[in-house]
Length: 303
Figure 1: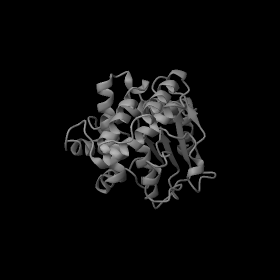
Figure 2 (figure 1 turned 120 degrees about the vertical axis):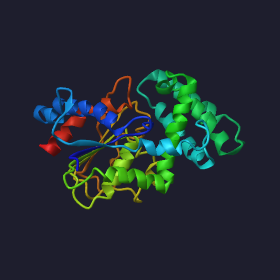
Figure 3 (figure 1 turned 60 degrees about the vertical axis):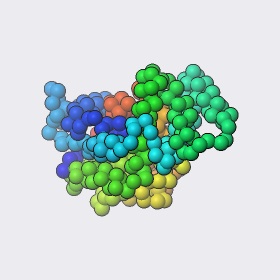
Figure 4 (figure 1 turned 90 degrees about the vertical axis):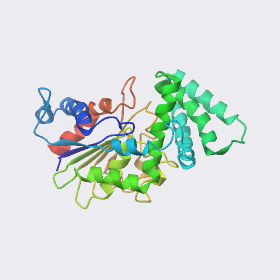
């Protein structure tokens, strides 16, 4: 079993475990090196090759590739649309709190426009569409073009919805993580939706886990994600000895940088007040991984 297990987020269905490991590992090593763990970094990644410290990606993107073939790529079912609308509204609200004034103005304008729309809408799909259109116009998505942004958001929101509402999907994804987590595992790292997956996987452990790291996590989205996690009510996983949660202030997905008040048992375990600056890519996984703030707890856990 791997000593470090990585769990990716949404929209990875066209990738593979090997490709993501090759992409993430240099960044993990970079963050560890910045934190003073040069020897440990060399064991993770050296001379453009993986080192001897086994690190594996728990890959589940193909689960959504199969389910995504049902129906049109740009359509959401009624249940998916209802959850997608709530999640998109949460992300828009986060945009209105951005550190960039132009982003705040745009998000506030979109929220005001949505609030002023007539209340009568024809079904959940019609209700979700204006919210998705508004979210697609925010800078993190709009730079890809309106059409691509909306298709990406529909796909992303469908994947989040499927994991949170379809127990077959949830169990399949959890099994992918369990394949790599064993007695030797000391660090579990999850990004985006992967942070929710990693958090739930940690609850299933029957032995101590020295470190859980969540990056760009939506766990603080109270009515959309938080209340749908397993088990309920949410709390710090009993097996976890240290939990570090990092968020970029402009990461729309990371609803609340500080999760401490939301998870009983956090005292002395959950360190969630930390924020990082990922520049123009606030939600990017490799930008999170390459930070000293990510590397330091890994160095402490692995010695």
